[in-house]
Image (cartoon, rainbow, N blue to C red; front, side):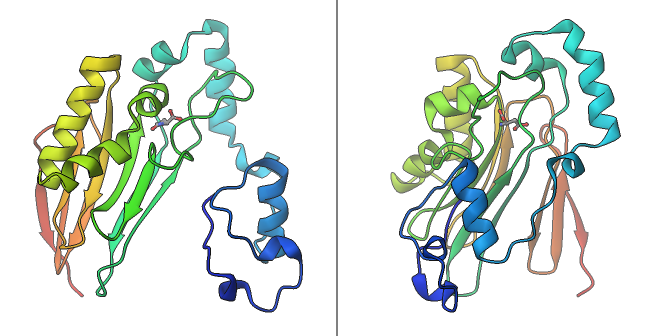
Length: 218
Ligand code: ASP
């Protein structure tokens, strides 16, 4: 869970958990903090769909390593990057992770610099793909390092994904936006569903090299 560090945002909450300069909380502490700022809590059961339960029952018989799972299963990671009119960028990454993972497995998605990163100087990135590989190369930060060294967001994404493939044999994808509004959606997986809204145009695709567009009626 990423936190807003501005204490004034939570003015009015007296609980000590409502004001913090920490940037990441996990487990019980994160829950307690969320509750203290008024986020509705739901029982864990509500987050498990019947479809997912059946899929898990089906696949747990063929327990495979994370690599095999990643290559054979569909994934549910959803990511977003955004740029506002004042030049602020932001990223968000949410995932159910990967099936048949070990208890305690942490993927790339919540780890700053791996599943996502945002900096008003270089841009915002959100990643998907084989979490263990993304963690090993700190993919989101790697992409922005290339941008800081002068690469376009497209080249920076391609180079970094290529590096992840060469160095740790992992596939993945990333969406990126720069503070000047350049954006890219790149992947080395077989497919990645993506969409981008730019002025009154919606860009979208799913297969490699696919880039379709539609005019938005605003
Ligand atoms: N990156 C996620 C994970 O490894 C999976 C995904 O992107 O679908 O947990």
